[in-house]
Amino acid sequence: MTGRIIFVIISLLNLILIKAQYPEVDEDICIGYEDGALFQIQGTCTLYYYCVDQIGYIDDCKNFGDEYQFDPEINDCNLAEIVGCVEEEEPFYPDPDPETNPPVTQAPPIVTTQPPTQTTSISNPNNVPDVECPTNKPNEILFFESLNCTEYYVCANGIKLTMRCMEGFVWNPDENQCDHPVYNPRCSNLSFDANRNVKCNRHGFYTAAYPSDCSKYVFCAEGIPMIQVCPIGTSWHIDRCVASQYALCHDTSRLRF
Image (cartoon, rainbow, N blue to C red; front, side, top):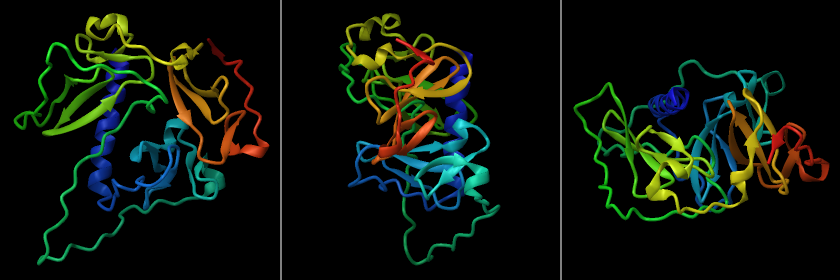
């Protein structure tokens, strides 16, 4: 449990730092684009948007290892020695015109995993109240239950972020983590698609093919499977997404179902 909470806290703090360092972040970048589209965040070498339901979720190529950067040539993560990106230490942004009102921005939602292709959720029969993040606890990271069984809220510095559990899991308010539905009686009658049968058979960080769908792959993080989608026009090949005509995606030997 501690490891998962630390992972969420680090992701949250990274998002806050990204918003502070790169004020030109476009939260509407995915409008009009299909799921799986990727867009590099300008001024960075590893950060990019991953589009799901026309919402851009921030992700980092470093999740695959410190030696990875975003490669605009293939629109995917690649080895840094191939990409050769050099990140500016202090990106320059001009001051806004004092005579105009500066735009008001809100932190976009982030996820520990990509949302599943099909997930069934239910409303809260116990009327869990909506969440207002406290502003008098600037140094605390707080977790709150959502009306949606597969979502939860994280509050930091008065900012509320909506988080989603990975496929097959729901929020467990007793443990402050995503967990199997059996541990949350309110959500125990949820049904999920076949993704719930995807399991990582060893610890560590690695990738593997997704069964029966070459457009997807599985990122395993310390035994936790995270379903990912290759960019449009590409499919899974051994250890990465490549042009579909060159892909062989049948290697599922590293997963058990």
